[in-house]
Length: 114
Length: 114
Image (cartoon, rainbow over all chains, first blue to last red; front, side, top):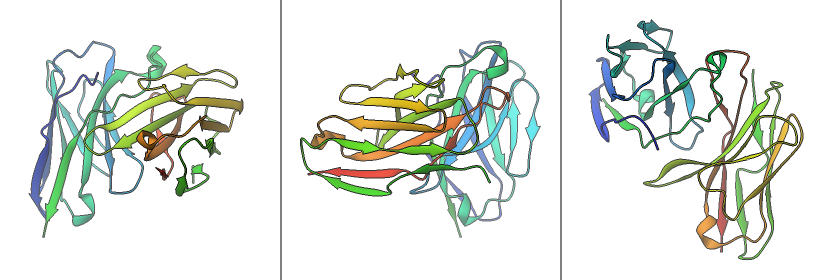
């Protein structure tokens, strides 16, 4: 079972920040938060992951609350090409001994509107 | 560029036929996975493998088998295809050598069983 809760869908105006929330209230201390996205007709693509601290890369920022029970993926300037299904997943990191496969929930369908 | 290649993008088979879906990765990854994706159901894990000649059942293994004779190749086998196996099949690979746990996906194989 997926251990996260995400809204089914969201809209965002092109050029604005897209903030995608995820609840993971049962997250364990050694579990990371991973974000993937799937553009139509393609395989899912890794975006970012984090444990406790906020993270940023060239694609997005990940904000994790202090209690780690929720997080937000931020696409700072959404474009039409960011229209996709976004998946939030929690699991133990490989170097911490985790080797369970990623379990994908239904994700959030983000529509970026011109 | 890292690559996961699935042998066929589109296949059409008849009920009862034996179907082979091939997946090859060029990243020397030890872990390989087969998912299927259906509208409204998201991605579901069929089988996975952490090493050559090893396999583990995922959430929906019934009606499928797998083969991992070489590290780079993971085959999904439908012994006797049925119409309810019409789906998009996605292969992925990962390594435990990095803590990202990032999954690299192929482009998918869309199977239609008539």
